[in-house]
Amino acid sequence: MFEEMRKAFGFWKCKWMKEYMNTNTLKDLGSMAVVAMVLILMALPNPPSDPGYLRTVLAAAGFFKWIKIVSYFRGILALRLGPKFLPISYTLQEGLSFLVVMMFFILAAWHAFYTLYPGKISWTFLFSMTYNLGFFGDFDLDSILSEESNAGEVSYSWVQQLLFAVAAMLVMVIRGLADIGVMGNAYNHYHDKAMELFVRARASICLDISMQYGNAWQDLGDVWRHQARRRG
Image (tube, rainbow, N blue to C red; front, side, top):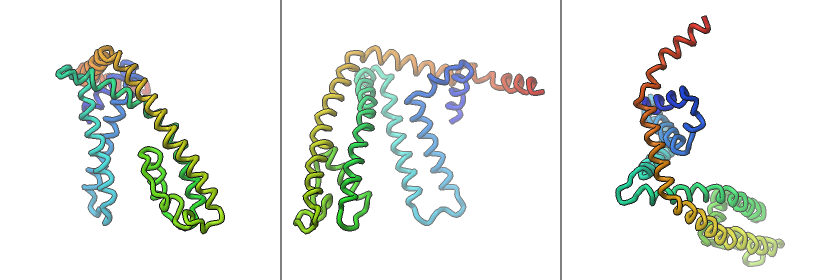
């Protein structure tokens, strides 16, 4: 954490905060935040009786740590790990914007399914069923439409079945084909620029190290004293 603070001050002193706030920095800050939450929860004199809080934070901490470990590959030339990892990483970032757009279609289908469901059902369970339908093509009609609707015992069962046909075509078939095209084109684009991305990644790593262990952060006391004199 102290090294991250030194790096942040170095970028701030050079007026490069826009360059500092990149994807790797956000991952590091997220990892440090969840680890701090774990330490706080473990240090509480009267921790919550429900271990769900601690388990959730531990899961988030483990997730961020594994992502941080694999991000170190971007600067390794051995076995061409860096040139192979970087096109995949940039492709996933491109796919993330596509997934954000598609999540609205998933939410639209889930909202319609939940509204038309004739009985009581957990909204989280129905959302997981809709998610499985859209991304895995795995579904159970009794869980999505209900057994009564499949048996024709509901007056608007035809509406549910028509909705399921439209939603399946939209979020499963069309989304899958579009996803393949978007990810394939993005990977080909970044694969052709693999060495350029690798050199850029190494330059970024060198800059981070120079900010952490250089002398920019050592002038912090001078900055504070100068600000104190200006206030005085």
